[in-house]
Amino acid sequence: ATKWLNGPLAQEAIVSIPVSGSLRIEADVTAYANGKISATLQFNNDVAMKTAGGTITYSTSIAQNGVTIATQPSLTQYEYQDWSATVGTAPAAGALNIQHDVAYLEATGAIQNYDTQYGVASGSISGTSSSEASQIAAPGWNAPLGVDGIAQYMPMTGGRGDIGPTTQANATWLITQNATAATYALGQAQEAGSVPWHFYDPTSGGAFLTTGTPGEVNVWTDPRGNPGLTQTVSGNSGWRTDQAHMPDLSYAAYIQTGNVQYLEQLNAQASFAEVNQWNPTRQVTSPNGTTYTDLVVNEEQVRGAAWSLRALQEAASVNPKGSADYTYFAQATNDNYAYLVSMIPSWTQQEGQAYGTLPGTYGSSGTAGPWEQDYFASTVIQGAEMGNQNA
Image (cartoon, rainbow, N blue to C red; front, side, top):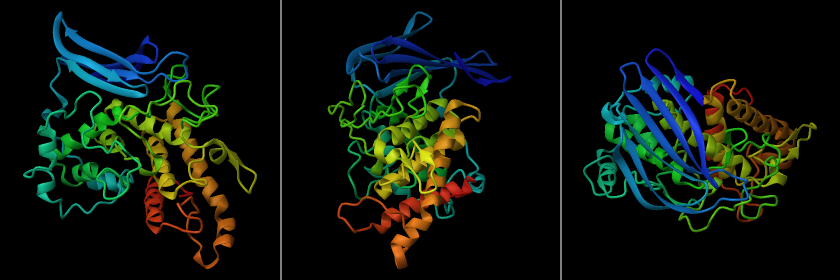
């Protein structure tokens, strides 16, 4: 077991239990000083690079002191998806709506600088058929392997509320600190487990890292990967992932709750940003002779570079220092910024009077999307505010 909290008010430990094939159960148990207990049980079909694994169909029944307290009828779970249920004797986490010091979070560089004085349109939270409150009240909200308003087809462009420097749900919660807004944003953070981008390494006990277990360093998780996953991502899950349009579902939830489940979701997404990157663009040598194995900003759609680098630097900023995850994501973040800085002289010469943009891959040769440059700028600004000197 791994200790997470170890204090006078609460003791928290996490254990991962293999079940069969690619399925494991992760139990996150917290014992409080008042004698109450809370347990989050994660049903994670995410063990990667095994000869056995894939889609499973099963039902669950959770008993407490001999009494059945939760059941889930037949559920089909594709590989690389996770879902969870929280049980115990402690009060539900949503019983209180804690008001966070958003100005302080902004001052630390943890979040973007939001203008909170104007709030948000009340109809977006409640009072309309499409409001957050209406969606929360609808059938299927927070269901195992549910959606909760996340766009399942991530390559879709346009006015989506779940993409940008953060999601609309997270921005609404941060700006208003409204209880309904918090419930909605945390619902999306919960359903981040449904996205099939969870690649668990049983050797390290965490997400895939491109400097980790031998055999993973060169893995490309795209179906075209060679070497790729031993069990490819199914096309039948209803989800289609895409780095260029992936939402930031878990970071704001973690920094406002400290719930380790959200940190694990963030790490899974940051790992996906790396291992779903084509090896020849991820593993390059810069003009100054430095070789990198973890680049997400090279010969990529600029919007994809923006959101991938965002995931890396967010994971680096909140993982416990000294942990393997912190070490990896901090190094990957620093490597990407160091590479960008090393390329500035070359790009400046190539771009001439139009210098100052990040080269990238677009639909038509010789074109550029200025909005994508804005996306990348938002990530770099966040990196600078987090303290990265090269940003």
